[in-house]
Length: 193
Image 1 (cartoon, rainbow, N blue to C red):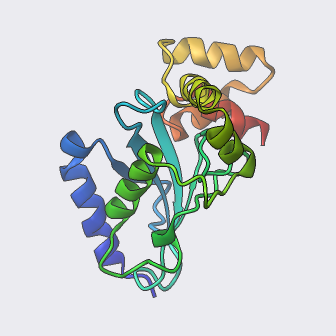
Image 2: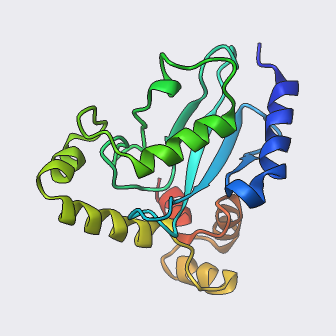
């Protein structure tokens, strides 16, 4: 059974430390088993300036089993699937400990963005590019960050208008944009899926 008291404490800790860490965890609905984490791209990497959303699902045995995490924001990285957002990170699998928290898991994912492990890839194509043509890898990772992980300067009404012009109902567009924090790229992905 999930320890909801602990989950509440972890959410409060993330809120309290947001200014220092830039890491945020919020609920998707009233259900504490589905959460969304947000991490800033690390400085000095192709992910700098990006804001990356991670879907978090807590298993019934949390904190004795690791949370299930995957990127909702598309990211070009050897240890993250460019297709599904699946993350190859030992603490999300066999190295998980109940002493770890959602925040420490998100910090570890942020550290993974800084220090890829191409010899233990989640995405073999990205890993090969990283090993064989590093400059192209950096350019692609930076492009994906600009395209998928940066907020546009458009206001909410302009975003709504753009998505409505693509044929989506306005009410659905507004609720989807609200659910993804105003990120029109994520909204478009959710509207198309």
